[in-house]
Length: 137
Image (cartoon, rainbow, N blue to C red; front, side):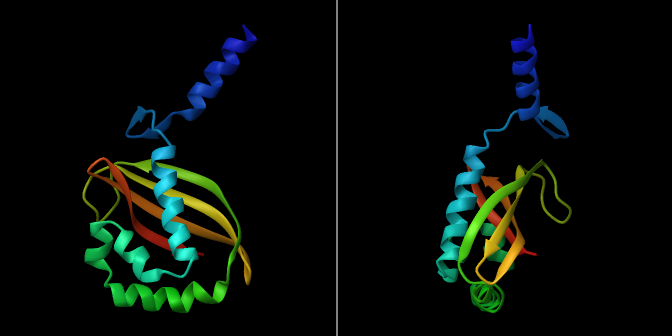
């Protein structure tokens, strides 16, 4: 009986509330986010813009994106650790069309700044998750 309760608790804890209760495969959204972050980590800022979703590209010119990351991200130095700390599944975000969104937060330690929070927003488009937002605190 205890085993059944533990299994049910684990199952219930994997469900995500977003207007309706549904199960979401985390691996399908984590992989695009972390591979995109690796591009940013490597300093290939123009490539990160090219790999971002169409919404991101329409709203942030590539030259501005590269310039801002050079100002903000480059001085932080190399990533020494990154750990996922939160995940939100949404079907609507203010100012954006309805759709499937995921907001991931990572606690990231950089060479020159420990305990930063990176926020990556993804939108599902054509059955793929694409980055449409990035923020460092």
